[in-house]
Image (cartoon, rainbow, N blue to C red; front, side, top):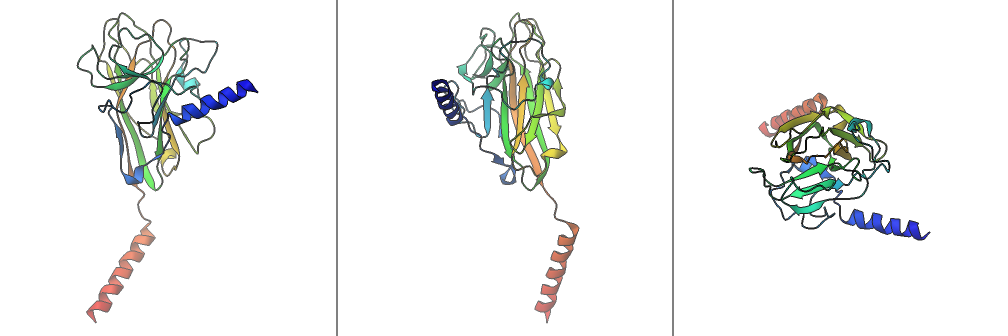
Length: 257
């Protein structure tokens, strides 16, 4: 019972340090470029970042390596996680999610990044979107190789989604990147993704997540930057448009009498 109580306390604390508010796309597009370094100021605290939360990915006690992230569809990504106020991806060997406010590998702007490890089996971030009344929902972002060290891992990335808040995630078509990094001693490789799925249209609780896995060898930091989610209003049915035109014509005739 004591263990359960501690687990409950940790779960509540994690939720308090996360923002799972579903951003209403009807109110405008969503974007996050991380240039405001005041959003994340303490480890494991995403409360200042609207509608995005990062997770450690401590999901497999066996610590496997080289797992294709598209095979991990379970809803949990483990504990809420971020290593705040970092500057050197070349020497930071921790796993999970990190905020790099600047980088020794200029000219990178501030960004958050993922790195697998023996503990961080499936680290990732989740975006929470409300697409009620919206169609053509599109997710765009850049994957950036931040690591200029001698490390040269195969850093796989997958983009997934779920709607309704329950059940497993689903892989997004075109959302798998076999290796988002180059090396050794190379950085700056950028992979730009633009993704959509018919299931996102009208979804009031749409979760979009980006994950990597623990690579064989020393993992490399992969930035997730310039995030944008756009959509369009659902067009009114032709019958409603015709009705509106008819009512407008009737009103005009009455005024002309």
